[in-house]
Length: 331
Image (tube, rainbow, N blue to C red; front, side, top):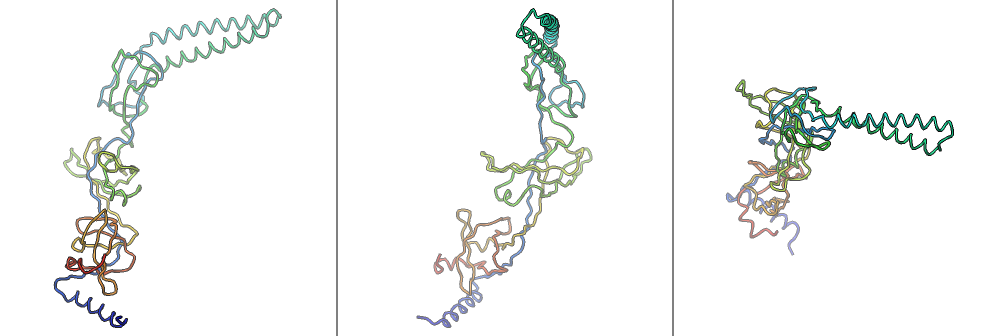
C-alpha cells in the first residue's frame, strides 16, 4: 500500500506535469455575479382589446365605423332599429296603466269587503310585473345605441347593418389608444428562467417621421407561465414607461435587457467542455492536484462561455488537452 506522503508527492507531480505539459492548458475560473444581456426583437401591440356590444336585442340600423377607424369618447358608433323597441315600450306602458287601474279598483273593493285578500294580492302582483316589463322596455330602448367609452381604434367590425344581434353579441373589437400599448416578444426557456416581472430594459423604436431611432425604457409586465405548444417559447410583455407618438401597433422594436444576478457563477469556456449531454456539460477540474470529471447543469450560456453555479471562490479547469484524460480519469 502506498504511504500518504507518497500519494501526496504523486499528486503534486501529476499537477506539475499537467502545468508543464504543452498538451494541457489550465485555467483558473473565479466566482463572479452573472452579468447577461438579452437582445430580442418584439412587436408593439395593444395590451387589451374590448368587445363592444348592444345591451338590447334587435336589428342593426347603422354601423358608423370600419376596421382601422379611430373614434373619440362619447361618440355614437352604432344604433339598433328602434321600430320594435318602441312598439314594445308602448305595449308595456299600456299594460302597466291597465294594471294600475286594476289595482286601484281592487283596493277599493277590498275596503268594501266585496273581494278577498287573494284578489288584492293578485292585482298587486300584476302591477309589479307590468312595471318590471315597462322598465325593461325603457332599458332596451335607451341602450339601442353604442356610445364610445374611450378614445380608441376599431380592430375588427363584426356585423353589418340589417343583421339581428342578441344582447351582448359583439359588434366591434376595439382598443383604447391611451396607456394600452405593450411590446410582445418571445423568450427561450433559458431566458425565461433569468428574467422576472419588473426587470427593466431598453426599447429602440424607429421614428418614421424624423427618421431616427428613439430609445425608451420599458419594464417586463407579464411573462407567460407556460410555453407556446408550437414554438416552445414564452410570450412576454413589456410596458413602456412613457407614451410616444412614434409607437403604433404592429411596429417592430429592438429590446435589450441587461441584468446581474446575485448568484455567483463560473464562466466555463467552450474549449474546456468535453461533452454536452441531456442539458448538462462535462469538464475536467483539478481537485487537490488531480483531474476529475465534473458534470453540471448550465445556468446560462452565450457566445463566450457556459455559466455554472459557483460553490467556492475559484476552481482550476483543463481548458485544452482534456481529450488526453478521457481514457485515464474515471467517470
